[in-house]
Length: 154
Image (cartoon, rainbow, N blue to C red; front, side, top):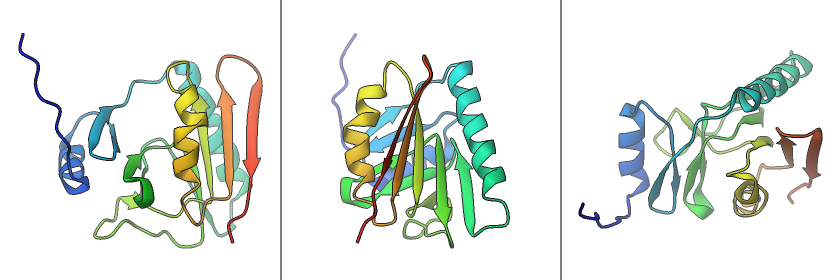
């Protein structure tokens, strides 16, 4: 078996591949990373949180998204799919796109064993570069534990 050389992709190349792919991938500064499938527990927690937020914010100027909505973080060159996002007011899209938002107010991630460190550290740091971002919720799928971080950008 011959190892293939690792290559960097542009965000445009990633998006061209992602739109036709059967599976979702994250893009992190040139690298395309396959997203692992979630457990039924992970899926149910994300779905329940989405449903609760969607109901609570009904008839208010917020939009709630679950799992399949792509987010672009330009300062870190990351495309990702948070478990749940809330956007206040109008949607802002990545330049030239209508399927990739850039202005979440709230992001929720359901923690899994393989991603919990990344979600708490590098991913959280990347989210904090988004000017509209004000609240982060981490839900542990293995025990009754929720972490919530509020901060308001200037």
